[in-house]
Length: 172
Image 1 (tube, rainbow, N blue to C red):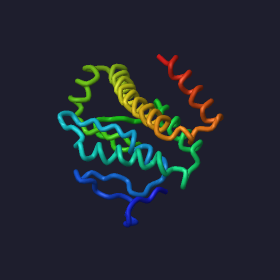
Image 2: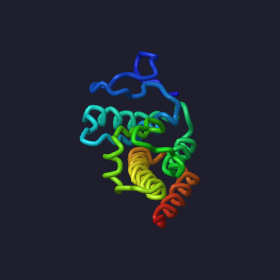
Image 3: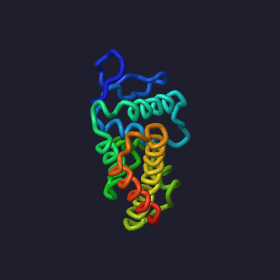
Image 4: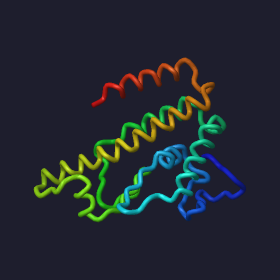
C-alpha cells in the first residue's frame, strides 16, 4: 500500500470533494490514475484531474519503495487489456470506471437498439468506447514513466515494453 501525508485514512477528499486514494493497494492506485468517468453534461472538476495527475507522478516516483518496477509494468499492461465481459450498464461504479447515465443517454451515445441482439451489440460498442479511453490513459502513464524515470527500465522491462508496443500497433 502507498501512504501519503500524515493521516492513515485510506481516502481523502480532494479540493473538489472527490475521493482520491491516500493509501491503497497497487491495483486501486492504477485504476484511479486511469479512471474513466462517463456522466453526460457533467465534467470532472479540474481540481480532481490535478489531484489524479499528482497521484500518478507520486506513484511513478515512489513505487519502488513498495512494489518492484516490473510488477507495476505488469499491472499497467493488465489494466490496458480490459476484460471483454465487463458488465457495464447505465449505472456502474467499479474497476476505475464510473458511469452515471440514463439509459436514453447511453443509447444515444452508442445507437438506438431495439432487439436483444442490438442491445448486446450496443453494450459491446459501449465497452469498446470505455476500453479505448482506458487504453489511452494507460499509454499516457507509460509514456510519462518512460520520460521521467528511464532508469526504472532494465533490459527485460525495455523488451517487454517493446513487445507491448509492437502488439498494440497491430491491434485493430
